[in-house]
Amino acid sequence: MLEVRDLEVAFGPVAPLSGVSFSLAKGEKLGIVGESGSGKSLTAMSVMGLLPLSGGRITGGSIVFDGQELTTLAESAYRKLRGRRLGLITQNPMTSLDPLQKIGPQVDAVAVLHLSMNASEARTRTVEILGTLRIPEPALICDRYPHQMSGGMKQRIVIAMALAADPDVLVADEPTTALDVTVQAQIIRLLDDLVKERDLALVLITHDMSVVAQTCDKVVVMYAGRAIEYGPVEAIFDAPQHPYTQALINCIPKGLSTDEHLSGISGTVPTVSNYPKGCAFHPRCDRAKNICTSERPAFITYGNNAAACHFAGDDR
Amino acid sequence: MLLRYIFYRSLMLIPVSISISVVIFLIVHLLPGDPIDNLIRVGSSPDDRLALITKYGLDQPLFVQYYRWISAMFQGDFGEAIVLRRPVADLISQNLPYSLTLGGLAFAFSSIVGIILGTISATTRSAIVKQFMRGFILLGSTVPGFWLALLMILFFAVQLQWFPVSGAKGWDSLVLPVLTIGFGGVALVARVTRVALLDVRREDFVTLLHAKGLSMRTILVRHLMPHAMLPVVTILALRIGWILGGAVTVEFVFGRPGLGLLLIRALGQRDYPVVQGCLLMLALAVMLGTLIGDVAQAAMDPRIREEKT
Ligand SMILES: Nc1ncnc2c1ncn2[C@@H]1O[C@H](COP(=O)(O)OP(=O)(O)OP(=O)(O)O)[C@@H](O)[C@H]1O
Ligand code: SF4
Ligand SMILES: [Mg+2]
Picture 1: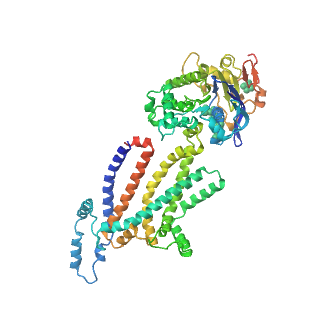
Picture 2: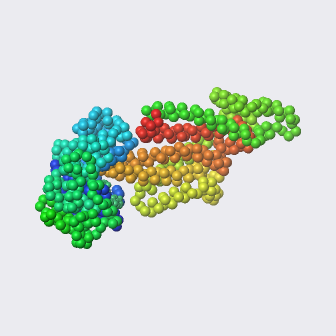
Picture 3: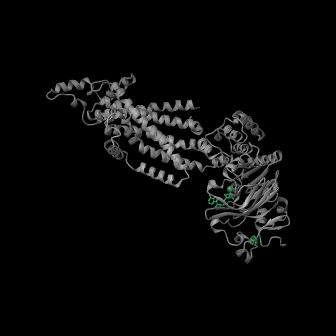
């Protein structure tokens, strides 16, 4: 359904993202994890074709969706995919709805635009979708304004907008980061159910390795603008190849359900301007050797995983 | 909801108008000189003068005079012009339409043209247009209006003789005064519109609008413009007072009849009732302007509607 190969993104001379690859079929859930600034949102925006909004540009690689190359697609054609076949959910539901408009029309707009419905057909559909998202009294909610609702409710509205035209791919960029812990679990469960019911392909971007473990089929681990490990969730949790992935997994408190995050790894993420030479992780890696400071490790398959580490696959 | 907001917002006008009337009264009466000097003929006796003073109640304590003025006002009686010897209400209703036309046109001119130019400069992709707009906005916000007025009179009225230099005959006599008052407003409104549009374009929800597949045009018209209009409406409401002030001087410069000319003449003659009446009308217009601005904001933004009621 969706295949990303060696994606590379640049903002003028700065290239904060390169070498990201993954593929995703219908009904599959792909997790993208990584610390803040590792390029997760840039990956999401690339897939949605929305990089130009922030002045960015895809400079290499390809994104193939349903047999169609997206990186060279004309904006007018891309617009027919967005909202229709590619849905997006963003991080902060507090700011992701137009505060001046009622909820109803904001959701209706999608069906009016893509399914050529008239206003009342679209509203019927909106009410129906809100109902399936377990929003109480959906007809009344349509007449509310965003500021009259809780964060969790607003995020459901955003999900409703993304689903209104029955997309094939749903890109969820940290859909729960801004929400209360209890609501987080509800939203993740909701997304999980939606993938099953609608046979969606889900890209779930998150900081939280335990969410990936519980929800996803595949995972891309990102560090400093690159994918450093990619594979099926079981394989990666059983035998992580990259030291960074191993550190991430060790950070999940065993058997405890506290919301421990990636901050457990010592050191800080490099920023675009000072990505280290060689393997970007070497200043924080306890297995780093000389070669790590000079040569960038290639992305090579080991068993079911693929990892970018000079010593991946070695027995330790 | 909106009706309730309008009701409460209008209630607030009562204390404001009362304090404004006091201030106007005091300013007018504390000015040096009095209207009687303009009335008495050379050689008349001090007794004549005293009689006149008593006739117009100018011998009473200030608060009594204020009370008389304000209670008459409540019955719609603006009093009688001392020097011009005509009901103030007549004078005002005769001159007001001229000022309203001028002010209204200048207001419409600066808001419509300003919003259009601001939108173009925020959305155009052409570097030349962008540069031109920036230059225009800079020019409009730095060049003083009266200087521009003189230039325009010299060029369009004296040199080219397209428009009359002064007077209020025909529509063409309005062109230069409207341009004079409106020009600074155009630049200001264009700047506010531009900044507001660029600001709102960076908001999260705009990313999601694009993600819905909406076209840039739809997003601009249905979502960005309403947001950009919030600060523009605030500025425009404040601008009403400025435009009326502008009308006062411009009427003087172009010799147009109107509240401004009436006011300046009455001030020279210390014709208290006329000055008070004119100032009160101007203050009222400013208050109504801000009221309309606030109500428009509340009508546009549900968050304001709720906050203030
Ligand atoms: N508009 C931009 N111009 C220049 N650089 C940018 C721009 N947007 C993002 N970047 C760079 O790209 C890098 C990756 O950003 P991205 O938003 O993808 O991170 P992220 O993984 O989503 O982080 P977070 O978890 O905080 O959301 C950042 O380090 C940032 O410096
Ligand atoms: S390449 Fe070297 S520095 Fe990078 S992760 Fe592997 S061992 Fe560590
Ligand atoms: Mg992000």
